[in-house]
Length: 246
Image (cartoon, rainbow, N blue to C red; front, side, top):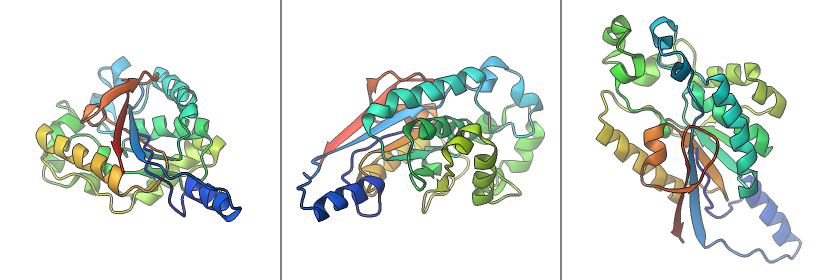
């Protein structure tokens, strides 16, 4: 997950706030630094139950363990002081659950929470499906990830269903939406290709995501790519900050 200071734009939470101040004759200084904060999801259920994938109906989409949920809530509390305006998350369930808890703690308005394939797992079916699910692997090896990931539902339907059942969403009244133009990685994807995808996604975050302070949350490889530790938050890894000047 990440947070970036990209300078406010009209139509975003902080951009509208700054515009109101300008309309009242208040001079709002222009941001000269862009930063992106990236964190990893909380502890996975299969960390505590190693055989979970062998019997799961959706072995590619591991949820959070109970400890992971606690970590996500604490991470949201720790991130409050950063004045985050938007959250962008990987579509995997553990990341949705982590970001849901963080969005709740940050008390963000609707329209501030996006789902983006750019920070999803490496597009490697054996890694996603688990070697104990060879029948699934043979069936899905040559299909694009988004053709079976949420089958038979559309992404929009799945996110609505998630928001209707996830306690943090019910409390915050937030529903995540797909980031415009987001699409699943090609398969098979090597770790090098995934690394290039993550790097490109970070650059897009700086150049195109016109929010004052966005937060991105994703898998471990994406979290560590092209970044340096900024602080410890109670999830599965450190919190990273990336920065550049205008």
